[in-house]
Image (cartoon, rainbow, N blue to C red; front, side, top):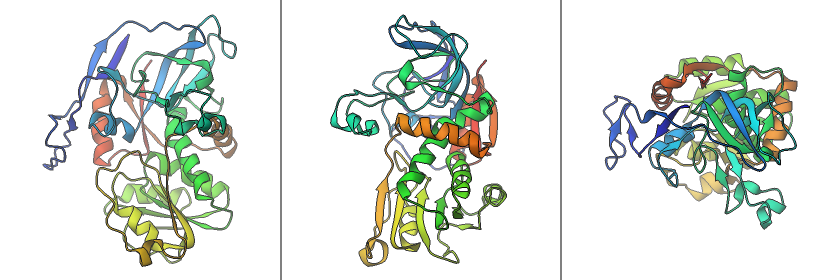
Length: 350
């Protein structure tokens, strides 16, 4: 089968002249095309013929050594949509031809205190798709049936891809804010995840204020189109304080800014695995006093995917996608790092 695989850590070259990781080789094309055997499914595993796979910032973290695969080469990609091609002898939930999705969570131990209370995202044996196990930048992939999800019929393959990470992780971040109807939610950054999260927040009856980097007019226009009540640039003070906020960016400044402008008792949720720039020093009286909270999002659970996918169909969420062929995965990653992706990037595989 054809696959686009990562063979070593490197810094993605976006031609801006700013080297951030001098210790790594600089590459315009970090992934290499490979032809490898189709994996076999055993036990409760299903073999999936991949039709589409979303492109996520987490792939950049893996490429640039902020996340470390246990071995190379590794096939990236954790927003997988496809059809069951074959099943292991113990599979009960799926049959050949079923359309399924696979998200970031690939497996967990199932019996530790975190798994037993539903926090399998915190399990010490948590394994991630496209990091600890081969992902969806390939024609086929294998996963345990308990970590695959039926895809609602209302979505095309490419529309469903971003829902499995950008959508699911955005939904988890929204839940962690504790936001309620009529309250003001701030979104910092307006890429793949935020443009889905705003649709859920608006469905819940929240006002949404969106903050972007200077010059991101297309992102700002999309935010307005999707119902943002106010759109500005990070660093500006909005017309009213935020009840809660989510930071979707890979840099640190929005965290400090969000804490500055949320109201007393508000919560700032950081939806990022790693930051490529540190969070600036916080002043206690300005950023944390009056019971303000700072909370991170760590991975996702199966519950998040099982709740979000039907909700997305009910709401009628339509991700804005930019499609690429599998062999153009490097082009998609460069655009994503440059901040020039329009909505969510998706690879069409077969």
